[in-house]
Length: 151
Image (cartoon, rainbow, N blue to C red; front, top):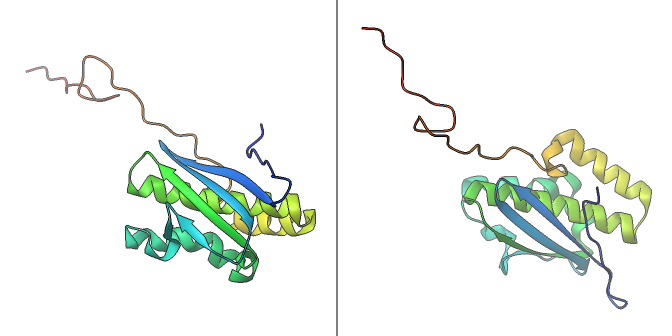
């Protein structure tokens, strides 16, 4: 299945990709630039919560700043909670860089980047399919039931 819908305007080299985690969706727009990375209009250094800030920086730290020096990435994220949004953002960043390198640089560089990311953490490029299971009748949750007692 096609993971990234990359459409390029005739003037600009750009790709659009997305990252998902639970119900959070981050859409990233990666184009030729000078190394800006913005999330909902704010710089990546100001991502909240700050305990998870390193999670967002992981793709950048793994690949090195030089690979991000000639691209601008703008990310819109909505849905989910704090943590799910962070994971969606890091996946969107990783996927957009891979897609950009595949489309506008070369296949060898893209494969090298992909291997680095996958060897570190597969969820950087592959979405986690787990979703919340719905509640059923006869109990307080999806699986939980009243404990059975015989006396």
